[in-house]
Image 1 (cartoon, rainbow, N blue to C red):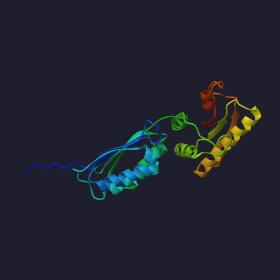
Image 2: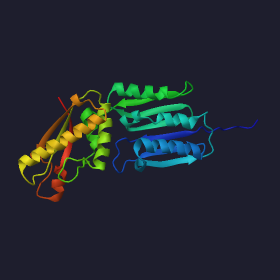
Image 3: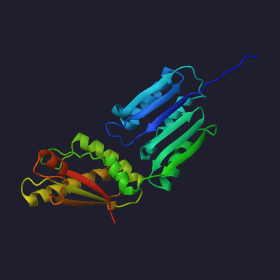
Image 4: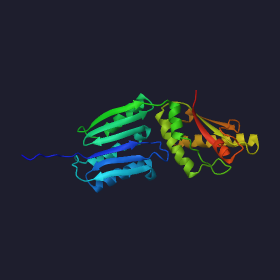
Length: 251
């Protein structure tokens, strides 16, 4: 009798929903054909952004379960953006979720969403763990980046809106925590005018987050102006660091 070795289709996705430039979302594993690769790659890019997805998938030599790539596509849902430093692994009909989430409710919800997207033939292993504190989640999302505005105004740039989209996903994962949005400026110009600008920018951020589904009653906007610098205002680099929006867990 011949020995038959059947290799199962597999995909592993390193979940970095809050990536810095050096932390892409990595797709690896072996898929049955180019069509499956295209479906999975397109779905991951739609979820995280094309510029963040690193494709390391191999093609051929494996046998997938029926409609396998369609089920992998279903697993790539918005819920995954709430997983930090994790992994979605699909080997045949075995699905494993690893990584850090903000609380138990999120942990259970992500696993439930995954299971409901599949048939009973699939087994979902929930290896998600409770991770960082709510404040750490916000800090990791911001990752020392700056919410950008048009010069001298409270109008968000396109890059600023993209960053706030990430912040909104993290705030949703924290459920009912109150958030303080604090605007800061450098020391150039009139202090009272700077305080006004910082508050106006904080309100812009608050209003944008509300459009993304965050409860307005959970967000407070504050303007600190130039009074709480992070760096020396004597240098251009220091002034750039001081012009910022902070996100704090409220009391």
